[in-house]
Every structure is written in C-alpha cells, then in structure tokens.
Amino acid sequence: MNRTHVVTGVVGIVVIASGAFYGGMTYGKSVVPSRGQGGNGQFGVGSMRRTANGGFVSGAVLTKDATSITIKTRDGSTKIVLVSPSTQVMKSASGSFDDVAVGADVIATGAANADGSVSAQSLQIRPVNDSGRMQTPGDR
Image (cartoon, rainbow, N blue to C red; front, side, top):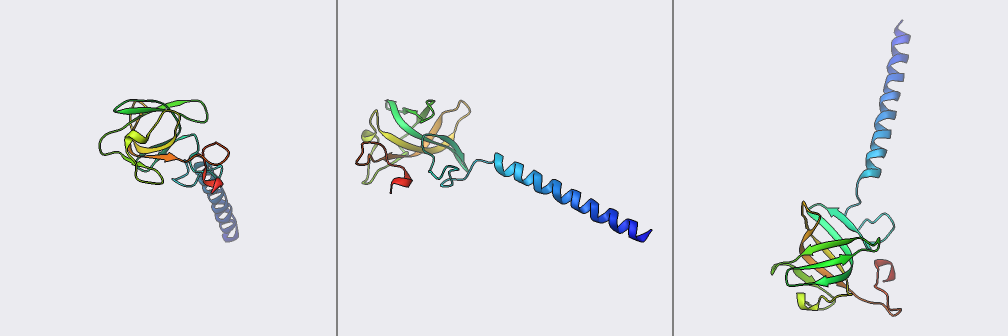
C-alpha cells in the first residue's frame, strides 16, 4: 500500500511538471520579444512592438506635420506617431524634428495610446546604406 502511494505521487508530480512546462512554453511563444531581441534577428524592422513603456514603430515616413508623422511599416500598415517639443530626435549626428523627411526610415519609441498611435519619446532616423536601402542592424 505504501508503494502504491509513492507511485501515485511520482505520477502526479510528472503530470504537474509536464503541464507547467507546456504552459511555460506556450506563454513564452506568446510574449513579444523585448527591445533588441527581434525574433528574426533584426531590431524591430518595419514593425510595431510594445515595449515596457509603450510602443515601438519603424518604417518609412509617409507624411509629416508639426505634431505627428505617419509611418508605413514593412508589412504595409501605417502608424501615426505623435511628437512634442520633448521628443528626442536622433541620428548619427544631433538632429531635430526638421530633419525628419517624408520617405525617411525612422524608429519611433514612446507610449502606446488607446487609439493605436504612439506618443514619441524619441525618433531615430535610420541611415541609407551603399545599395540605397535602409540599414538594419544586420548590415553593420
């Protein structure tokens, strides 16, 4: 009888451990990679991702006005990115919002809004490589 309890206990532990492992693997596949850990080896190329403090968008600038830009991502969707005087604009050299041009490839990070837009904390203008296409981290 003691042996039966031991076998039952071991089988129960194996079943629970298997279920926990499966649940962990399923959860791990559903979680968006954190900043800099793109699933395809690239850093958010043409995408909208959520980061710890909000949104992450990269792609080509379609339109620009004094308070926002519209970015076309590589998957063809568009995202509105709201900017303010406190939005940092980065490039190889110091930049300003005047440096953001229609057609430029940018990365915007900031807080995701309920309507799907992003309030930018920073914009990074991505350089064009020798072949005329925007550089990705894999190009460096």
